[in-house]
Image (cartoon, rainbow, N blue to C red; front, side, top):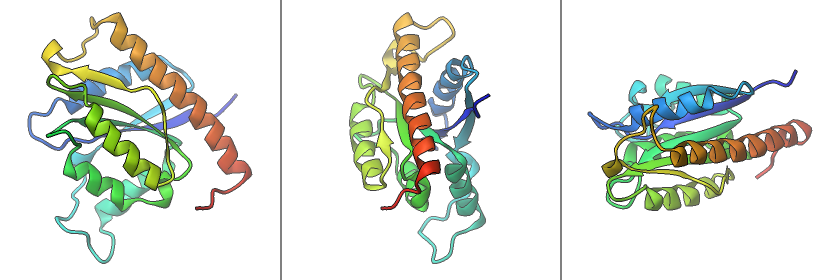
Length: 185
């Protein structure tokens, strides 16, 4: 039997009252329907990151980098704030480097009147610089239409399924490739 694909679902918002944890819960319920995926939620609020980049990594930075290193693939759950993604997410992404390389990244984005496309566009640029592979399709949610629930639209469930299918394909292909040949940047 094949080892399940390890997916880290990263909650990119640290705001009090955020929708990110509820969106993540709904998405991970969709992912749990796939026996070949092992999903771990990585919530940035659980890490005590320093206000400025330290000369030496802190215990929280090391713990976050270990989580990134363990994963075969990622889903970043991000809001769109002022046509971009949250600063704490950028800070966290920058703490890892080699750990992102040659791994796929998918996006679940949300906003009000926006489905988070500007945040995702900017994140694609960041992850490309880190030698990660971003998947084409995005699960975008307009919160003015309500947060996803078990009774949500077939369209949202279909979009989640497409994102997971693409992430699975790239995750398995790149995991096999990294095992056969270490990635060199």
